[in-house]
Image (cartoon, rainbow, N blue to C red; front, side):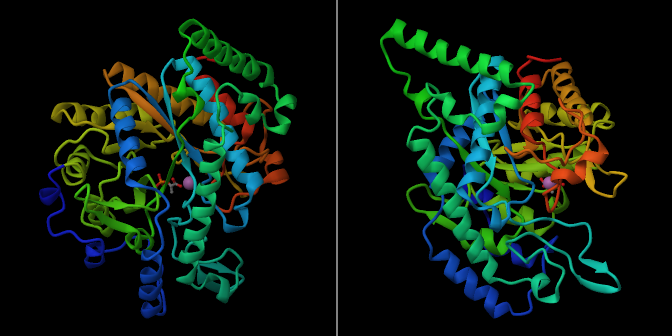
Length: 449
Ligand code: PEP
Ligand code: CO
């Protein structure tokens, strides 16, 4: 990258001169500055080598040679930083990836919405309950869920607690992967306890066996061990929403002559903070990480062109991913003009479909939910539209968990509105449960239609 041109007038804190969307109001700015100072002196969670390797892998996905599986919680919670829950999330993503690899016959790039997904955009700044109005909950990085004045007060120290948990989470993931947990020769490690009770269990086990047999066959034919297959890569991602946190770990690396956000490999810009003149675009334009931008039915071709110019002025491979989230009723109609815009300027972008955020609705019981058939429908229409337009849908972005939650309706067990309250655990958006997530993977892989 011609770093100087791309980052002209940029500094890790130059975003502070712009309008900051979705920002909490801290009472004590000195406290915020102190926390940023402390955070910036801590060691990074990820390295530029890993970031660069993800960028190369995204570049190959842009050429149609790989597929990105990005998934995890809508919002991670500090209380859920436990070994059991981390293992569950890793397992479901590994299982899904094996299904997708075997169906698409392409490498899958695994990216967790993990190790830092702690800040949330909200539709209102305040919440009123029984005549009492308090700031809304903005994620564990900012404040706490319970409806008391103390819990809802934005507390800068939570950024330190979040950074520590992000580091614990990614450290554990890294050790599991390096220790052979993700070895494709031993996918039995990834079985979740309840897989055997699932209607999809047989199909999954059959696929896993095919992949393992294929590996053994290849290795015995060539006499070589497939190193890559032993050690899968697993990258982290979060919405780069809370800019003081992102800024604190943004470093200039002399050996690369670039600035990197070292809290995560792949930060993305949410739909609500993608205003061209806003603080988030200002911050993101200066970092060299591969980045995502959420786009939706409101996004115009002009806005898309501006985003590409500002965020990837040199049209670098692997830099820019557009994550589209339209809703099942909107995708076929709105996606073609955006694909056309990208094709006309010959921009290098990766297209990823988020079939979750355009399909959120309120159930009769008042809980936020998503219907599984709408999620599948958006995904299927997205694949088809890209194909019809001569483009490539190179990934999927999902909110999911490895557990047995009941947050989205439908799927193999036909969950209904009445089932939702049974295991509704999310604080923010409804996630696919284990079986629903596996079913999505099987559809992507073409095993079910
Ligand atoms: C999210 O990914 O949780 C989110 C808030 O999405 P979007 O920016 O697409 O609304
Ligand atoms: Co969400």
